[in-house]
Length: 487
Image 1 (cartoon, rainbow, N blue to C red):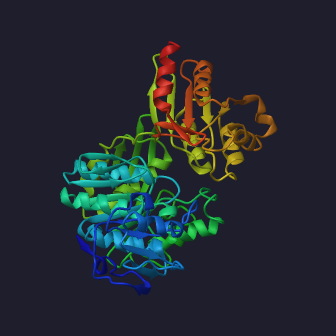
Image 2: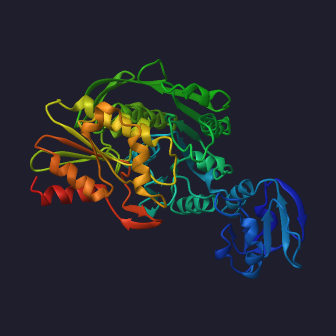
Image 3: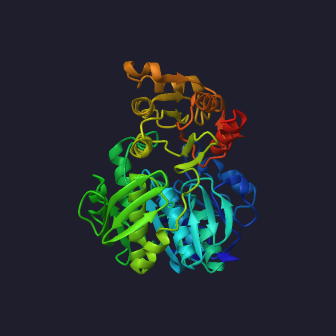
């Protein structure tokens, strides 16, 4: 059992009603999970306000309430802690409850619009191959050494993060690589964590359904680097126009990587093929089994991080050459008739353009490129026409379809996408709402040596329609259809 006053360390407290010298069972912000002697933290979310559930939490056995506004009636025998910010309070309380596990390993955060999952996952792979016990907190999965857990958010809530970090400590993990989303930073989920390093990938159009402006989105990302300690490193993609912005106010050790400009970690692409990249990294040539310019940036971020964490340069390069691509990130299969089907998570305009330009770089132009793409429901609507424009501009044929419609009408999403299609591209555009049928049509249209890109969902193994998740796997679907068609 923990004592309440001990887990309140570093919390910005406004007032205390009742005793903090009480034994508590656990902390939670979901009133439905409250049990006897628990602490309930009232979080103001986008869909509901935890302050509305304080009475329910007490009925279920909560012994202490953490809130930013006190209820009108205070129950006898209950401790009420009024705090400045309940999100921040939850972050510190969760870290304290689990014994501040982030201070007991080397935690590196990866933030930016694109590349977070690839960099974090490949760093996990590289350090595991180097013989370390490693942890991973990513969009795709959570890894505690060899044990895999399902991920539900890019950056989980503070309690979940600290729970898994604590599991890592108990498993003997020494390094952990973590995706840090703008939502996670804004909602203070990472506030009480101790990072030894932070990586900035790039910044482009995304999450403007959550952040009112691009400037706020950028500044939220920047705040992650502002909060890094002097003992940490801040590694930034200086080719991105926001790369220097991220480093402006950080007290961490500043390091840069780039393909186009001078940087601490620099690469030149010597060869770019469907089978990989030949790179000159600083003064050494290396072949990696990753494809495209965007992956050259990812390689530099991984290499720079390995060096900053104390790995020898030649050892890092050797391990880089063994890395395998991440599920749903430019993952491809070649059929019997030599049709190449590529599945990629590209769900932002920048990511889609990067993938299509990568295909353009490695194709012969004797084949046609067919792109299947959609946009998620209940998310940033402003990127929909841009995504459709990019797909139709850079493909021989483009099929607009459903991604995860969630609670939106799929036809409305396609209407908003279609607005971006230029008149000269109408002839090469198809609109097929059902995603499986769209993939099947792409396979039917494809001839030997053609390329099919299925963008937007990547590693996801579900499709969310009307708020319900159904099993759906792009790679599984395209393989099955190509086989059925005898292609």
